[in-house]
Length: 183
Image 1 (cartoon, rainbow, N blue to C red):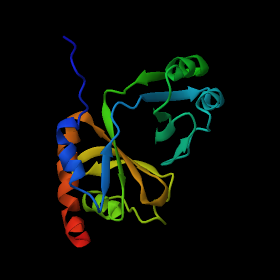
Image 2 (cartoon, helix red, strand yellow):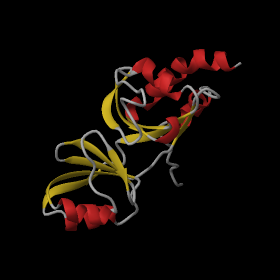
Image 3 (cartoon, rainbow, N blue to C red):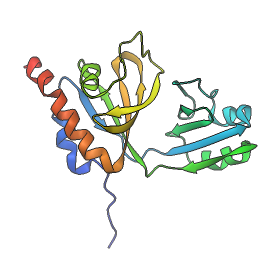
Image 4 (tube, rainbow, N blue to C red):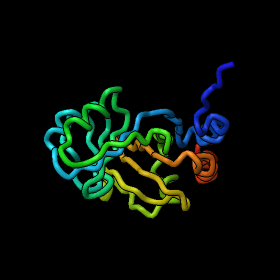
């Protein structure tokens, strides 16, 4: 008998769906995630990733999204198979670790996505303060997340798998007043 792999929010998809129409929330499970610590070899890593390594609190897109997490730390999200080995070979001083099982990914969009996030997040999400390309590690309702600000009010949230059900419940609760406004 083969065990079926369930995403962290498979049993909570109804919570995410209940955010509509004000917020469209969908889990994008099982995206590859590579943690990259790099001291030397930035240009070679950029060549593998198809994009320059991002500046502070930013992300860039190449063969996947490349997120700045710290002075010498990046997260590569959604890179194709073989990227881990290519990065290990390219980086002179550093490390590459597959952390795909650590977090799940939730895509948020819709007219109230920014407002719903603001309910539980201390980051100023106004487009002037957090333009597209912004990437921050923060708390959402006391849950550690990585937040990417995309174009046109779309967001990507990375949340630890063990906190994903709590995150979904909090998100659904925060979206409640906006769902009522849409009715």
